[in-house]
Image: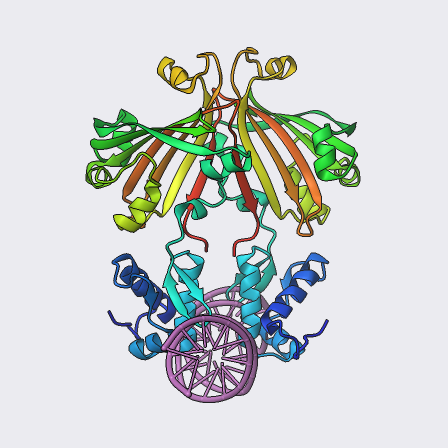
Length: 240
Length: 240
DNA sequence: AAGTGGTCTAGACCACTCT
DNA sequence: GAGTGGTCTAGACCACTTG
């Protein structure tokens, strides 16, 4: 890839896009070339290189380490989901021990709404129960496009962090998600799995995750015991 | 204010802090001096000025307008609360018309938990009911430190955007918030105000907002009809 | 000591906005 | 045309990490 010095697109932006593509293609596994190397290769000044890299750092694609170099960021998803605390964090904050149990996994047809929104009809389902100190708290049901699901199936999902698997083992980059938090009453099965009466309130979440190209990666629908769980969100005016 | 050229703190960071303080003190109401002016005043290069300004743009304090200048950002809070969509947005997205009614306002003692967490015992309460197409959806109860509340009281709160008032009229900068979303059952009063049975589920949110110095600005506790409302959150790996 | 990113300078030209 | 931010260059020195 080369830069087009005649293009109206700024050089730092062209360079940023080239680097991003190369990174997503896995051309750099850990460390990317130094600023001075990139400077020579692309025949631009160091500021231009630094401007491109800074943008990718802000996007969470790269991380800089002073004196060592610039590295592809494999920050676990938990962190960039960021503002919204994860189940494990919340449970630990309450002073309890989180654990997980696989209920079922396999090919299955997804709910109609999902099929439409995601554009895949055949899907792979993983259903897990999450505990805090051995009390069932949440019922997670995750749908994946079949090809992704079959890859996931090669691993032991009983205790695995699926997002880590997706990113590090399958090379799938999670990028954006839209999550809905609502409240409802559980179905009979859900109530019995969670050990609560059917008349109780539960928190319901739905989430779509897409990769950088906008392809669907996951649809999740989960139920949480409302008497023992709440979502925490950190809102900030700060962006950096 | 001057820069300390001997200090180990980078010049761009010193400059950033000086500008931020001046902005929060209201020394610049709209436009800040141009990059070339700042360059002369502080006797630094333009890149250093630009680095300081860029940081403040990322933090949401400043906005640049090509060919015009750099301006203090008065973006409404709705935008930086950002990932979490606001009531009005969600209602409009559903194709309904949001409205609001003031139920009560005045001095009141805040709940014990609040008193402790915020460190103010006397507080000012504002309670409002939010509608979608004239159907009551949410019950908002907001607590302010007394001095802020008495200032707010000078305005007509029946339809006002309180966060706009705080920022533009009272000069209070909202900075960070921690929000909790849970599910519960409504009290008798809450149920009747929302026109739902006591056995129904409602969404409960609690939120603390602080200013840049960490002082408490607001505590809010709200109830939402679960059958007609859900929270939407946009999660993204992108940071810029 | 060599290599990396972090900071900073001085100066140039471009694109946009306003008058 | 004058002023603004946007882009870009070439070169310098510093601070940190590693052999």
